[in-house]
Image (cartoon, rainbow, N blue to C red; front, side):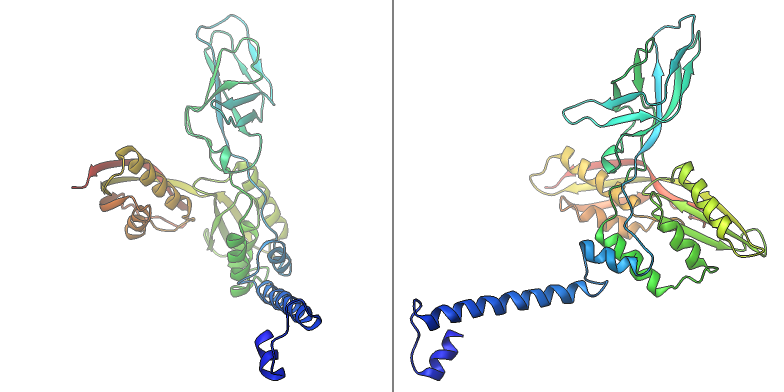
Length: 343
């Protein structure tokens, strides 16, 4: 603006002059307006909107951002030696992982360690929602509110199913899918869209005429695991209450199909073998966490995930080749990573 003024007026205004100050203020306001218009353009379309504005766009299609989901699993309360009386384990008993940043878990049901027995299993879930609640087997070992008579707690199997609040990209994907495949209350899109709108469900497979004419089967999957029984029961009840006439709706968690992965990798120069192995295992788990119900395992995509770590120069991959049916979901089984240092 200052240059244009100089070209037209034949002189350059002093920065401290009235004209110079006006030019700078006007330029700032024009820039602010341009920035606001650019922001408005981005927020006007589902493809580019984010945050609260994306949620507003989703609400126009009857969608909302999914809440965090608590991880769930089984805790085992035990003693070293049996005693002659029963020991109750109340619902709401709190346990946690060890370490500097422990994650707390709470039992969701009551149980009794019977006399002359050493252990009892109790269902439990993370105290708060989020992926931080997913815990490896054997990592929940601290009894915060330990019942009298109980000496130890542990989780023989992993706690899974914990998910963070739905991201912008995931919500955007659902929004665009709902527009591309419109639900009419009776088609496959209707059942799929409803299932995906529920917390704890990341994928769904709809099988029309699964048990003959007038039947629909819906198989649900979480992030790398099956959704909880409570979620499955809620979706089943809601869909059967709203089903079309003369239609039987069957809702079930997809059958988990563990797939074992063996990888022989050559580490990039200067990298520690343990770091490379850990990065590769994480990449494999993340790949499987992204798979949905009935989606096949693609070795080429898994290979690409390993190379995306940036820590390997070469890779030989062996993946279980079992086919995935419409009622199954491939999940991560045993991961074996052999690291060779590059020359």
